[in-house]
Length: 209
Ligand code: DX5
Ligand code: ZN
Image (tube, rainbow, N blue to C red; front, side):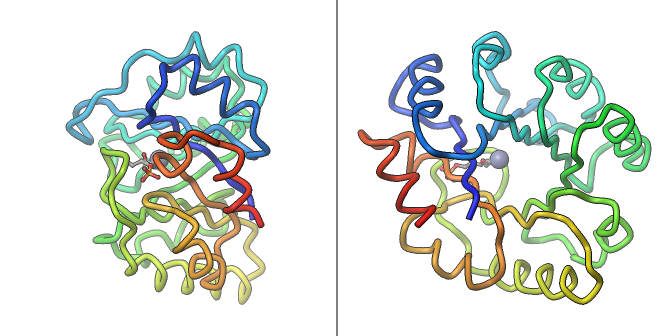
């Protein structure tokens, strides 16, 4: 199980949080970017702090017009950039831009969205991000409906030899991780469970083992 840590909600300052995440055995830093349009919240500046990080970045754009954000974050050389299905730009064009810049493509699916809408993209995606909460805020409880979505995505992946990573974002903790794994997830995003704790590594370990 791969673990990406989101620093959206933390009890420490941004730089302190990032340095504590860097000291854990997590696989990615999950960067939640919000534009104040796609979701109400707007992300404070974090690019300069992120430029000092060594761990690979998994950027999640909750943005109606992701292209300008992709261009802005591009020089940090993120491994993944995830966009949402219902953006206000041409989805195919954005995917093409990511691919031509050698950035792995993630597509996010919210609980009220239909998995069928993702189908045309499953073959070309590197990551499907199953939102197990509504996007916009850290610290929300995990919604169990996500398990069925993960299960279906896992079957589709196995039946068609698709290569995407199934990532699950929102409300992940040591209780629900077992169900998320058995539903077929390859990776989880954990925010407040790790960053609101005293011992980041202990929490990351509890998700990885
Ligand atoms: C929700 C974000 C998540 C979230 C994770 O909009 O995409 O990445 O902050 O944080 P927790 O684990 O607290 O739900
Ligand atoms: Zn996220």
